Image (tube, rainbow, N blue to C red; front, top):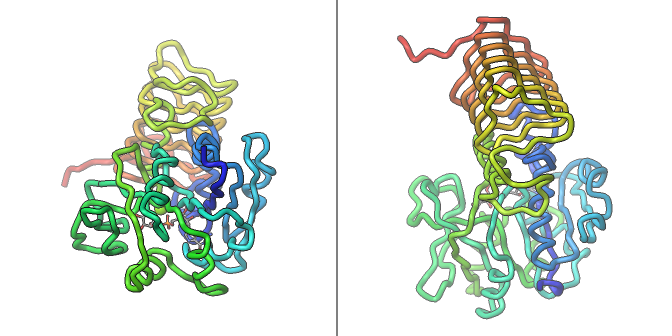
Length: 357
Ligand code: GDD
Ligand code: MG
């Protein structure tokens, strides 16, 4: 039980509004398997026994507080702290220092879906008497992440944020334990990157920085395809969460959703409130937000269909994102990450993907 540890969740910065995803909610609040993404992370923190969680954001805290309130419904005490300008990851952590009192603090990137045993991460931190401990995972392509090599004692030897030629496939999973004093030592009142400044400076100064490597479920939801895959993993129970609003399975149907008997909905698809899926439609591993319509014989695979959007008869979506209220006309075909902005109407037969030259 981590009841003597406090947590900080970073949900600010430029990337988080996810405008490019063409959906109106900021990323941590995007419905993911039926609830805002952040609810899944908070449920993991709560399940580990942590009670006090400070959300560090750089934009409207109401976005979060309107939904989560004081956190008591989730068994948490939530505090919201807003930066007047985005302070970066390190600055965001420093900015909440005065709200912390525990000797050890867990810090989370707010866009990571993770099944790691948080108690084990804190145990590593304490056992190694570390100043900071980083949760590390191995990924196929480490270039988009912070590459973090360790020695045979599990000591971090370098922190290389987003390099073209990473020396190992072991990366920063975006979950740390800090000794309180280390947070206090981060410069105040200016942007600081924990990845590019704090960790390299600590290593340079000879601080004890430990790595906790495991093979737990892990995914950064930074891209639309990762969001879709993460959501499907939550629905299927591959990614653990106590916040799923229903049983795990091939699909999650929210209130008022109607699926024709001849339609197939599977692969961890979330069918939002009031969604309608027509005859012969096939929906695989996708997110259908509230009020979306998938008409007869349409195909929706690994795609996001925004709130109130409509996919007309026999249209096909593969790895696509359809903005809120947009219409994909009958027989259109979208593939490979194509995104339709909110309210855009594609006429029937108006767009087709073809690899032909
Ligand atoms: N409060 C606050 N203020 N939060 C911020 C700010 C800021 O100015 N900038 C970023 N954040 C938050 C984001 O909301 C996100 O939850 C987290 O910090 C990480 O920022 P991203 O923009 O998502 O970074 P990334 O995914 O490119 O890389 C980070 O995460 C990887 C793992 O997912 C780095 O920490 C990498 O080293 C790491 O491998
Ligand atoms: Mg990220």
